[in-house]
Amino acid sequence: MTRQDPTTVPTLDLQRYLGTWYEIARLPMRHEPADYTDISATYSLQADGSVRVQNRALDGHGKRQESIGEATPLQGSGNAKLEVTFLPEALRWIPFTKGDYWVLRIDEDYRTALVGGPDRKYLWLLSRSPDLDVATRDDFLATARAQGYDLGALIHTQHTRGMPTTSK
Image (cartoon, rainbow, N blue to C red; front, side, top):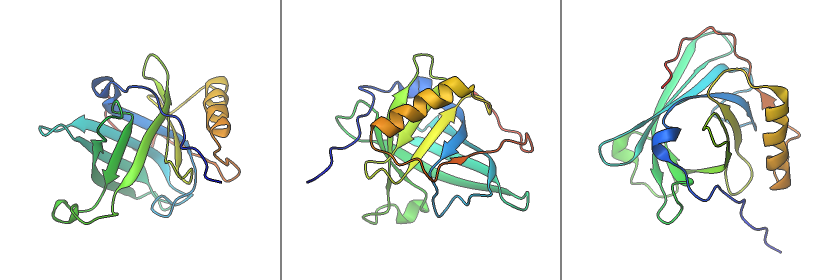
């Protein structure tokens, strides 16, 4: 029996999505160790219509880490499904090097977003502010559970205000 893909938002207004988002919680992943804090992502539109992704964090030693990537909306997805790569530009042609970034839920004011992958191994709860009220957090995480994401290993991201970021 195959499981149905998670449901995304019908359409995503990329212009409204641009700017800085703070990670509130995530499922564990290799390139983002559990001791990372102050994680944010800043999205900006590039001339070719793709989205520049600038991820920033403080590692377990308080040292700033940064990675620059590119996200491309998938045709026919209403911009709700994107492919993201952090490979150097010269290597981005290599097959199977892009990750799925699906917007599962976003509030009408574009202040809180839930993003995951179709395999349900990756999940991020994002907010325009480093702080998110418990009721909103729990409501968005309930959406993830309802879509089949196992939140047993969920990491709640700490924000120490140790790293300045710009916001749209």
